Image (tube, rainbow, N blue to C red; front, top):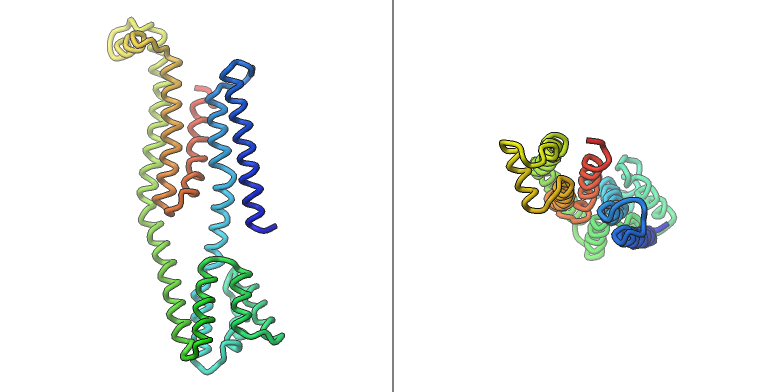
Length: 285
């Protein structure tokens, strides 16, 4: 099954699931359902939207990273062989005996095509289409054009390999630098959850028991909630809503900081919203 068809299937199922959850939320709001609350179904909508496709896309991006991981090594080995007098076709044949991770099977297939009489440039174009990652396509296009133009192909291969390696090192460095910011955001979120849990399990029950008539901070807060027409359950609902909103927003922010891709942010949002909901709603406090 192609990636395009898989994306269509996942997005279609996501849309159908979100619509069904929205209908259930409306039915719960109007009192036509005996189970769940509107907020439960709103959380379900968020999880449906931020879960399946972002996790699939993250897996696809990881697969691309693993494929492209050894691309610069492959091009550099081609450059070395070419510099010692081998043709591009012979260089590919020699490289097919090496280990280039996820690229190895496709490199062997490219060498086999050359053995069958396919020109090296055509084999490289088919290799690029077969692998299908942006970096591989760009690198093969550069090499094919350089081969057609003549001149020293080894210099082009070396320059392309260096450029790819630089891009990979920049991405790795960015992830390492942004890791500390990611840790700060996650820590702040879990500290907030811990504070809410303490409030729900210790302070709010004491306020409810005192009826707002006690002395001290608890009594003052209880009186304030009563004057505002708010019950303890209303306060708990506000805390839960704040935790869910913070989890969703922090998840998006973490994804953008770490990779610059919002799809990775949705994946983090799924995790943080799910944890907030489980801790504050499902786990008895």
